[in-house]
Image (cartoon, rainbow, N blue to C red; front, side, top):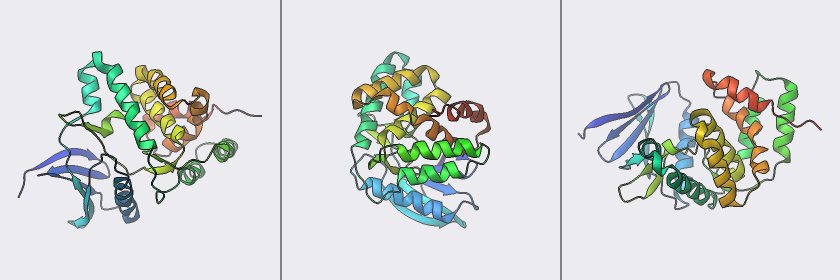
Length: 249
């Protein structure tokens, strides 16, 4: 049997390496439908031709659901950014180019971003009905696109191989929809964890995609609401401020 090495442990899943495979084992109470949806997302994005780990199997391990994928040897882009601050601009440029490559793809069987966002806004019980209504209205008014959206596009989800090839991990949140919504989420993730890079990222994305910054910013309250559903206590105050940034007519 190949050596087993734990790569990451979270409250509802454990990810480990076994030889040339990555195995993601979910908690016993993790919904089967969510596991199967994640595997289906991975398979559908794989068909676009993007560099992502190839899915091998979905199985039960000791009564727990597990997804087995190819293991990609390399460093995360986040590690490289942390170790080489003088190369931040170069890494950020490659990061945005990769995000735009993702958004250039189509996967018609993926769930629709607007449907997912509407469900999340509806489930947000700790904001007022007035704010939920405003968020639903704003979301309904946003242009409908069919671009592949990652849903958690950040430097920790990108593996850089020794030859510089980049692979994108974790497609559990993938949808098809408006690329600016995905950019707004990436901007919020930077704002939460690396605020010094948030504006630099936003400017670069808008420049390379020829998108007005105001247009991406219109997505921020919607995306903040969907992020808030995760219930991460240390993010709550920050996200609440974004959700309250609404334009009343």
